[in-house]
Each structure stands twice: as structure tokens, then as C-alpha cells.
Image (cartoon, rainbow over all chains, first blue to last red; front, side, top):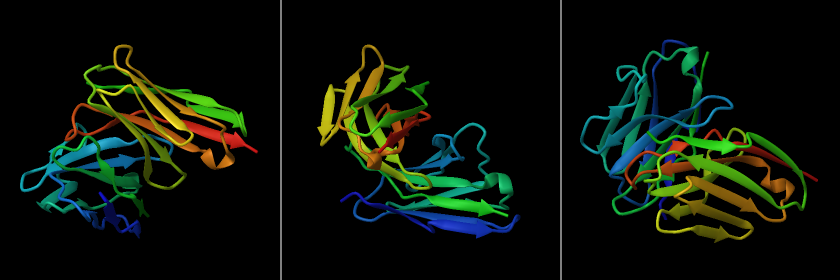
Length: 115
Length: 112
């Protein structure tokens, strides 16, 4: 149980295009989802926290108008990278938590390459 | 604000050796601490989760300890194997619904 999926697993796009990444909790309802990104040889850094039905909370330095997060249901959160540029190339990982559970469950990640 | 540090950044050991990876954190009001494994280009594999009320957790050849008073956690790997080669990340959370703060990881190479 407690499986989180991400789609797509990888994407290559041209500079200036927008890319949507989906994060789904497959067998549980996620009250909170987190979006992290990881640059090469770096650790995971939190981008934003999203709660179902409310606006996401972004970390300092993360542009909310560039990284649009929608958490419309208890099983789905989406991250849209708008007008992507090469510096947005990274590994994006989501995690989901549910009420009364001590741990978070991580998706397999999405590798974004912007040409 | 929680900060997590991992030492060493990289470690190379011969196969069969027992080893310890270290993780330290600044906020002792930690709710839980998790150890993850990450293979190159891949996502995270959760290894062990220690809740604040626990002192250690074991899974197979892995044993993780948590000492809140000193702000430290260790991951012990017994009888290391080449398949253990990966980056090991520790991460702490202040509650189940707050984001995890990750260390930069220890890159382990086990040489056959």
C-alpha cells in the first residue's frame, strides 16, 4: 500500500514551452503533497507544499507564477512548469502524506530536460 | 529551521566491510527521521523510518539509530555488498504533515 506515482517519468521539451507533471496517490488519500526538486549531485530541496483545495505554499526563491501547483483532489496534485528554460532542467519528485501517518511516500520522480 | 548534515560526503569500502553513515540535525524537536537510498538517476527508496519515540530500527543488514539529545542518527550497514553502492540520504521531519529536510547524502561505493 501507500503508492505514489508520477507522470511522465521523463520529458524533454524546447525552451519556452510549458510542462505538466502529475503526482497521484494510488491507494490512499493524500491530505498534503510536497514538491521537491533535485539538481545534479545535489540533495532534494523543497519547492512547495500543497493541501487539497487550497493554494500552495511556496518556499523562498521559488516563483509561484512559474511553478503552478494544483491540488484539486485528495489523490492528485499537478506541477506545471511554465515557459521552461534550460535552468529548470532538474529531477522533480513529489511526496504525499496522510493524516496520522508518520512518514511520507515518494513518487519515482520526473526528469525534466529543457533544450 | 531544521538543518541536516551528512558525513562523509563519499565513502568507498571493500566488499564485506561493516560501515556507518552519519547524519546530524539541528532541531531536536524532530518528529521522525528517515533514511533513503537513491541510485543514480532514480527516485528514492525508503529504507528505515525512526519515530521520535524510538531509538533504532532494523531491517535486514541495516540498522538505524536516533539520538535526539545529541542531534544524531547513524545508519549501520553490515557485511556490505557491491549492490549497496548508492547515495544514502537522511531526512528529518517535524511532523507527519510537514516537509522533510534532506541532507546532501553520502555516496557509497562498495568495491568487489
